[in-house]
Length: 125
Image (tube, rainbow, N blue to C red; front, top):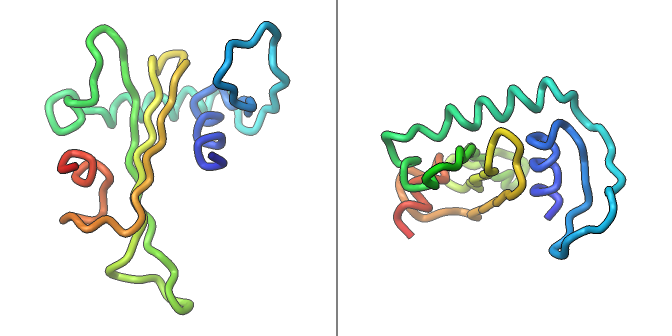
């Protein structure tokens, strides 16, 4: 949840907002953690990363611009970064111009090949 909250702020004009699953009848308190300009640039990168001709095409919703980005991190094992064990993630937000929804999927030690991107892991499951 903490990872999702921080990534939400990156696409939400840099504003950290506590989440809720119920509609709000008030404006929530926010905290600016990055500039709105940096947030706009992050959204642009996420939109460009969702290539509509490759694997990302399956993640597109007709009439809605979906932004997304994968990540990979090697795990620290015994004080050293492992060449064989990692964590992959995929973060998505939509509509990317002014996100209202987001999703974060994390896979601990995925067993597919290659292990360095979340998309192959998602596409094969």
